[in-house]
Image (cartoon, rainbow, N blue to C red):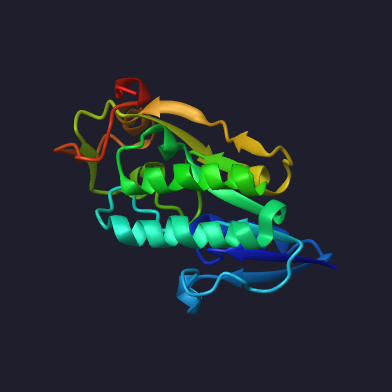
Length: 217
């Protein structure tokens, strides 16, 4: 029997990952999540496990609470990697290509520590699907109005949650970048939003960028 731990088990991707892993009769599952009263900042040794999928994080890319992002996404991640090493799979983000906010910086730092501890890195893009909250999910669910920030020329990469779960569980490469479909927000809106749904254009957020080619480094 293989013992597996999933941090962030009640989150969007975590829920889908848990559902897939539960179908394997040879896996004994343990899930921890802030929604269940588990704070990874307070405890990093959750027991002995054969594999750990580390998804728990403060994931607001527009967060201004730098210290909270650091304590959860960097310090707690460091201690988990220190404890589980090569048995840990770290869910990173394509936001590391846009290091303009504390979330992106924290994920990039996690990747660096993963290299030191031998933990596997899976860099995810914008994930969508049942229970998700990506721009694709919001656009699909809209019946009256959608909000587009700026002029909608932000270039982003999108992938279904099933692909994210596969990348986390079935690929053993030490570093893996999940490939997806690249599209600008206005193109996405044209593709999946009904013509009867109004488009509200709001000022672009300070932490937002058009694409990585816009950055000076």
